[in-house]
Image (cartoon, rainbow, N blue to C red; front, side, top):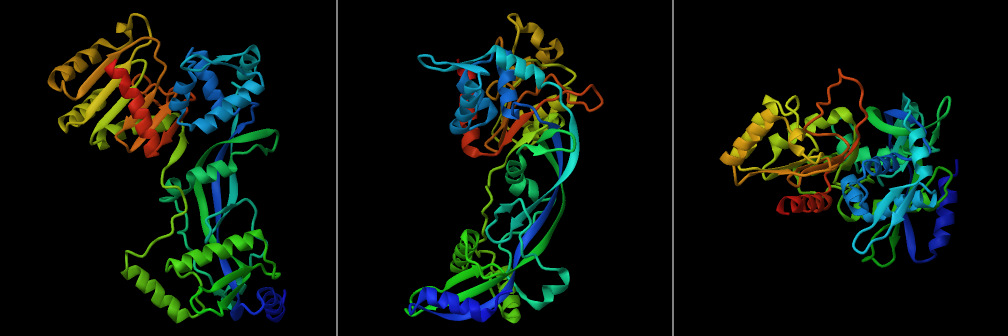
Length: 438
């Protein structure tokens, strides 16, 4: 372990006469040790996003822009995916005057067919979350100290809350999922992350670091804070931490305090003053993958929570799904002046795509709530979409109004993308509403 004198001599030389060192101290830097319960799927040559694109193409749904919207992907990410598929000779890209269409190649068909077999296994994964910068680390920091040594040093205060079962999904799910969604070596063969199903554990750990505080000779200048590792090194990661701590201190969020009494006063003051700015680095919108049995609850939630509009695209409408509960929730929403738009239809003669008993009830809605209920019949519709106000939207392979999602029935693998990104929801909503004006 390097001495404080060696550190001070080295960095005072670096700053020369510009700054004076006013404090140097070994401290405990906070991290969160995160244990996640994950489901892994046997690795296929094609990614989950490519599987979804193949499924659309197999159903002759081949307009590139519509597929992108239904998958909830940005143009940059979508074009990257289909560009790679085209390079690997999985698909053809067919430019048109107004729109690009996609087609599956023979190689693409063979690859897709070979990926149908799906084996799953459950495993635990570990990540480390930086308590100051909010960065995710795959490997345990090098200088983590033993529990028995914690009392020897002062601690740097965390700037983010510890992830918990009640908060982790909203704030951290997408970031953890993206971090883990790489091909890893399984016990027998390669696998890919399918889903994170639980946050099993989360607790704080500490890395031993040095904190140096320099005062500029010009009193108007702010203090300079340097964070060094336990060996006195100042590299890219230490630079990032130093900059973030300075930013927090500038905002009035004190993470460095060597006086325990002052630390307690700071905490009391923060509790009293609810207007103190909180640091929130994680994205405020949730985007996540959802599995088969999560869909039914989202339909119920949309009908219960909506205050303005619910849009449902489902090729078929069956009475076993649109039961008394769903009909009742729809009517309650309509009475609150929520607009409900439903589109359906697959066959050329689409009267068989909706059960007669449901058609009778919807006809009553059309009469009693003519300004709020819309029903549109079409043909060859593969879109399966749910939109609730600007709260959330789901683009999926799940048939909202014809598949019950019953766990007691034979397994069906239906996947979707759930999004709370307001800009994306508005874009999808606008696109789907055009359908009802045509």
